[in-house]
Image 1 (cartoon, rainbow, N blue to C red):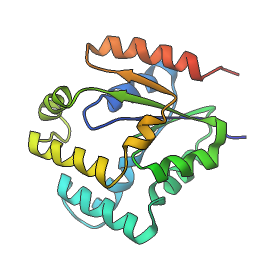
Image 2: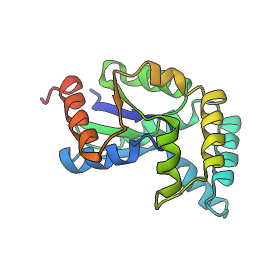
Image 3: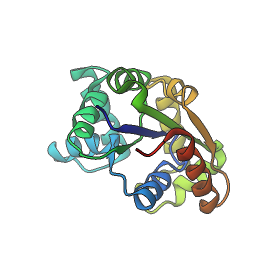
Length: 185
């Protein structure tokens, strides 16, 4: 039997990391971060962690191992965790969505977090970890929509939250979303 796997997804700067951190602290659930696969490979290759190197590594891994490489690695990591609920941060591709849905079936749920581009770009310019310039954010948006087909998984989310207010508003919405998709055993 699989754990309940809850993926949080959205465009850069939408609030995924804040949401995951809140859910980890509030509910004590572990997470698997798609981005850690890229970070691990960038480090393995001895490259500095930059948006450009991340993009190169992501594309190389997908070209070498297939579009579902990240999803298969995430499944391996999730299945190694002993927990009734596991969070996944930063699902991107339609293929990843399908691979996870095929593996976990009804135990796989998605929460999409949305914020307008202007709000996201402002957040990305001022975040302390991995800030993006406006130009980098626009380039990343285009890549995620055009090449990763990120719109599909967002459109198929079980719950959509708009995050354009205060952090506490997001947290209230997250608790409401969790109540909809999670029935504790």
